Length: 187
Image 1 (tube, rainbow, N blue to C red):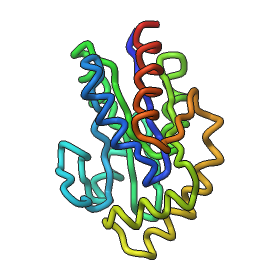
Image 2 (cartoon, rainbow, N blue to C red; image 1 turned 135 degrees about the vertical axis):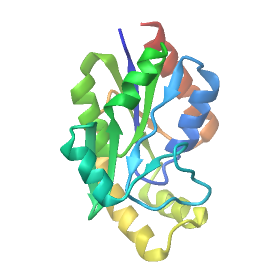
Image 3 (tube, rainbow, N blue to C red; image 1 turned 90 degrees about the horizontal axis):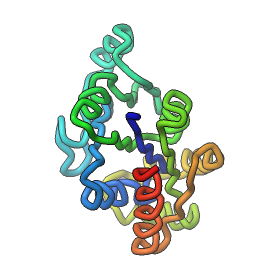
C-alpha cells in the first residue's frame, strides 16, 4: 500500500526542524515539495523547499485539476500539493512526507484515509510560539501578529489529527516522532 505522512502545525512550532530530522533518519521517506504563491523566505530555493508560482500560474493549475489539495491561506497566498509529485514519490517506492498548513493536513487525511498518518506539531504555548517567530527574524511584527492569531485558530484543529506532538523540548519531540513513524512504517 502507498503511504503518506502528513505534518501540520502553526507557523513557528518547529515543524520544519522535525520534518528534516525524520527525513534524515528514515530513508524510506521522501519529501513532497508543495507549491506556493508566497515569496521565498530566508534561504528557501525554488524546487527544493517549494515550487514558487505566481497567483495566475497557481490558478491555472487549479483549473487543470493538477492538485491533490490546495488552500488559499491568505488572500492570493495559495499552497497546494501536486498529484504528479505524489505519484513520482510512490513510483520510487517511497512514503510521501507532507509539510503542509493545518487545513491542508486535515484535507489530505480525508483524501488518503488509512494510507495516511497525520501528525500535528503543537507549540508549548501561544506565548512561546510568538517568541519563536520574533527570534526567527524572518517576518515583521504585523506579520507575526497575524501568524499568532492564525495559530490560535489552527490549534482548534489538532483533534482532527492522528497524533499530536508538543514541541517543547526538541530532543523529546524528535524521539516521540521517531517512535510514531517507526510504528507506522512497520504496520
